Length: 203
Image (cartoon, rainbow, N blue to C red; front, side, top):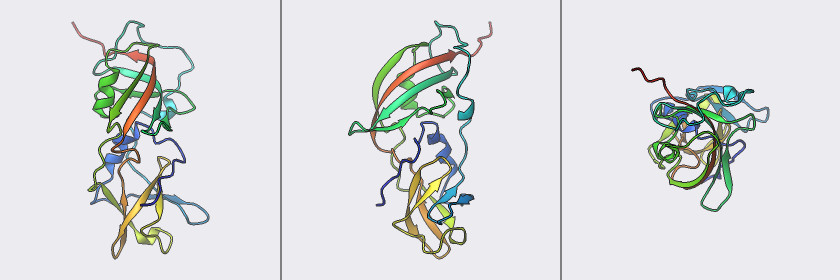
């Protein structure tokens, strides 16, 4: 199987985005590099825009607020694989932002964050943090929009910034593996909670 290329951290929030690709859909093509070696496919975007993740001001939440279902959380993190190599981290521009329970993170990761407060740090390991590897998770791309000769042994690049392997070819399409590159692995996270805003509870 072709090696996975981490040209940019495949952030935690992308797990939900990959669900937009399926066997019956054809990912739309956005661009191709000048050499014709990469193909960029679009997938569903996370609910929260990472470009909005960094705030110039300090935390807006109550310092005593604890993470719960519905909390809007800002978090910096570093993720290491089973070999201890850093394979993912929060963007350089600032913390990631997500709402607990909205499917933006794996439930197993969210469970480890429950009860944490602003400024707290935590290190923990999670099995299948980026989902289980599912051999049925494939997508199709029309051969017409790909460089001639693209096939098994090549990689195509998603707009999220990382590559996925071509695992098959039929008459009109190439078939890609759309599992997250870290699917099926036990990942160790080092996280810092930057902000927690809990939903307003009515009386």
